[in-house]
Amino acid sequence: MSEKTLLKVEGMSCEHCVAAVTEALEALPGVEKVKVSLGKGEAKVRHAADTGVQELRDAVAAAGFSAE
Ligand SMILES: [Cu+2]
Image 1: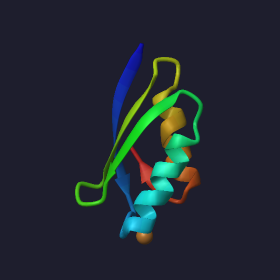
Image 2 (image 1 turned 120 degrees about the horizontal axis):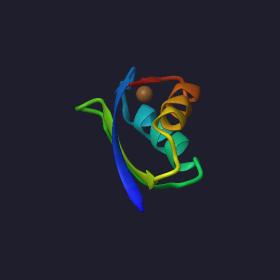
Image 3 (image 1 turned 30 degrees about the vertical axis):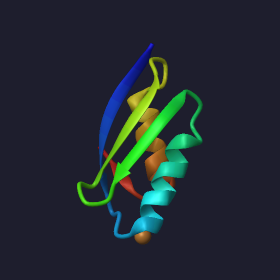
Image 4 (image 1 turned 60 degrees about the horizontal axis):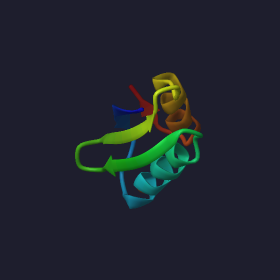
């Protein structure tokens, strides 16, 4: 079973930021699909049910952005 999580991501200012957030999320085990919107400042993530939202947030934070 997959779940979808929508994260609000702060601090993205260009396509490089989008790529960095996308890569950070895609690198997590269980993450199936990532779609990051620069304009909306959000990331849509489809992931396995056992991937926690906190793990997603931590990955975004490790890339240098903040997510909630
Ligand atoms: Cu940037």
